[in-house]
Length: 279
Image (cartoon, rainbow, N blue to C red; front, side, top):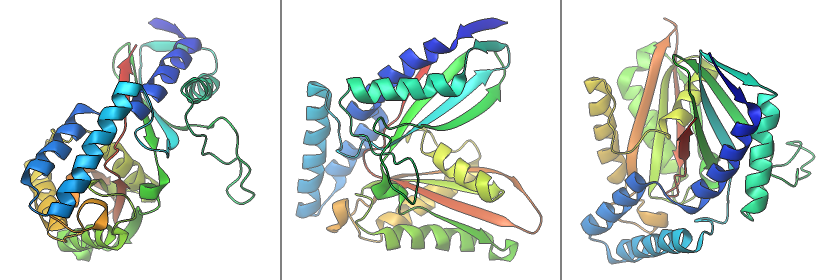
């Protein structure tokens, strides 16, 4: 049994908040750069050039890639042989508070969804925990902007809708989103589980590297097919047309009830930010 002081979470999360907001993951950068090489539309080429210039400046100067530094999603994979001393929720929120303060990151969280008073420190974090084998803690910080979050959708399809119904819902969601989520986007898809689990799977899918295909060949083929069909929509970078509407489609799935087919689509903009550390 390994014992951790909750304060270790705080220090790590504070650092990850800043790094995630200022440095785009390498796999996403490579996807954007490859898209630029293969984009024939001059307007789309120019926009992708600006996107590449922007994330280069952000990394060099340690400034946010996007002005919307998002609501802070924190994923904790906690080994079953770990004991954390202290209040985990308080430690996570203190990390976000410190990171967004020290990094001069925009505070975007309101205390109440209807009365709209800003909390002033970007807390609370959206916290997701998972118990896994081992004696380590894996922490992933993923700032989620709401230009893309607002374009996400969930549907409780009928089993008879089948895979064609799933594909139609995903394509319709991306097409209706149009330029709003700042394409080129990454599309996270969750299939199965329950109403809430499908949404969680879709968000979790965005944490997977765009270089990594689904381990199940059936879903890997479905990801490739959907990416091709989404890019054929012609929305293009920032909605001005072109070949590059999406950089990747990542699908996560799990078992579900015989009477249901939950499907969630969580869209992320080209600034698909996440940073991971293991304690």
